[in-house]
Length: 463
Ligand SMILES: Cc1ncc(COP(=O)(O)O)c(C=O)c1O
Image (cartoon, rainbow, N blue to C red; front, side):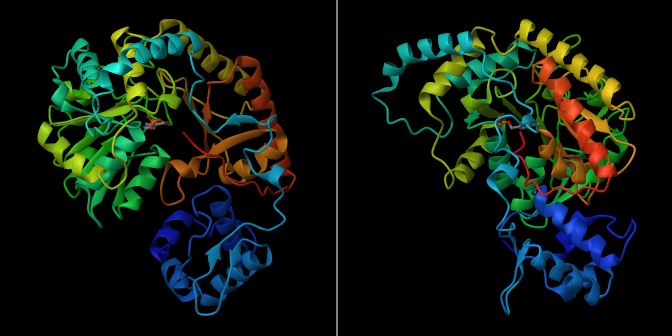
């Protein structure tokens, strides 16, 4: 895949800052972009001349940076072709972030499966499956039982919804990808929270849209700025409930007052994860035109791969067409199991939420003890802390942390333009003793960085 000079410049952010010669700073930043996955393997970089122009620097600087990357095995060159991203041949398997079983994984924000509940749901699903045998099993809207169960989930929360307002998808990420292909054309602007969910950024870049970031401040969403940005946008994508990565929720007053000039997709994947008080009301109660996406990945288990879109039947018809080229429907048995979970009210599990709140508090205590200079506000829900370090160490920390036994997702993956180099997202889905160990490892990794160590680990997958 070709990456434009404009995109690379955006990812590099303020690369000029810091000590040492410019070409060294540039090659270091590019190497970190490879290591944290923002420049994917095989990506074709812009020519030296184009990148120099986009960065407002000399071609000699870019040429020297590229040569350093070639020397260290991070770029492959062929004559008359663009340089492509690679990894050094001697990157041993155990240095790949997800290879060691002892490594604690703080890059995925996802729960393990609730065994008994899932077992019972699949037992019910197996009993009901024969009802579907006379049909072909290809259904791009989803089976009636699950569309009805999801519609009922909205109705119970006060939002009138009919089954024909629901399309079942293979997770919320799939729902977003289908909507992006339905609603967005190349060069369209898409308003995003900043920071936001990394795979959403990737989804919009894949349809060649231009993300238009609106900062999420410590006090939350700024309705005026969102309104202004939406005027030039084709779509807005917001995560108003226990936002990933910050855990913040949009206040009732902002929800009530928000009027956006473009269609708005609200990602309600985290809705069932209120750790204090009640779950937020469905966003579409206040903005009836909102297109909602949801999922049981966080409230039950990501392995179900079940999500949905709530929208008008006419938009769902267009989404059905956009879906055709990527998949032809969602497995029936998982849909039946999810319908059983929803009908038995098992996407809201108070005991699991109590455990999650304990883990959140344990993680914050471990941070206060081992990384007291790190600021991590207490979120009212969701599964992640958004930690701020005093210095811009995030990408370097993510590259070295696996050597100390923990993987993390660097802050810049949650934004564009190289932002959030001071931030790290820390999920609290592991048991407290493992969270404490992970924070100790992170503190060790930070000390190693201050001694001048550098890491070479490939990025961990994110959820
Ligand atoms: C905000 C948000 N949207 C979507 C997803 C993807 O969800 P799913 O597993 O249902 O595809 C996630 C997963 O982390 C998420 O945090």
